[in-house]
Length: 88
Image (cartoon, rainbow, N blue to C red; front, side, top):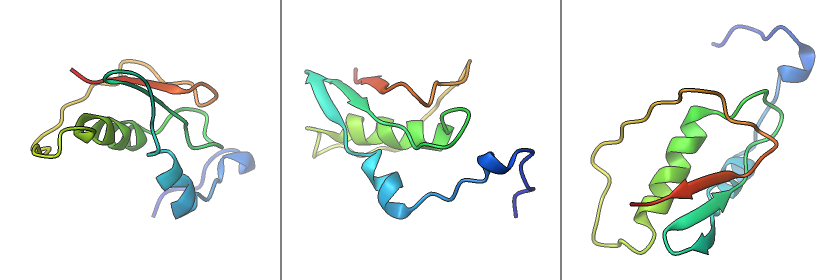
């Protein structure tokens, strides 16, 4: 189990529907997407970013599969801003 957080407002319970909603990407250009964040946290959760990146990479690439993924999170993402994802 995770240790309790310092502030009561950080104890956020996320529903499955809320998590799945973050995987609904909006295409803004070819191979460029935006996505929303889960609310209630002081930063963006890295697992959310990885899942959104996989969903974006698989869009239009039905014959492909994800085998590995490597990521570096050099700074915290802002939970109040949309996530921008570019596929190469």
